[in-house]
Image (cartoon, rainbow, N blue to C red; front, side):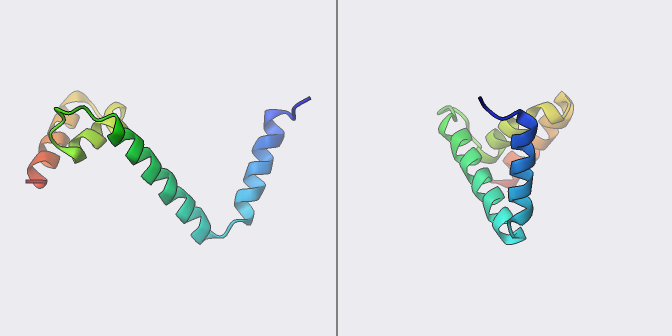
Length: 80
């Protein structure tokens, strides 16, 4: 019989609370690097700008269409 999800949640929180801030930062950095690598692995060949592609993958639902267009244009200009 497996423990209830709440018990697992509490256990993970307790483990994280005992972890040093530097270790938590390293873990977060590693997770971001892994997510970035996975996103880039699925990048189509015709995607011209890496930063714009990553922005679309990670933040597409956080902005309206006009905001996304403006941000992507800025990213493409900044990388030239």
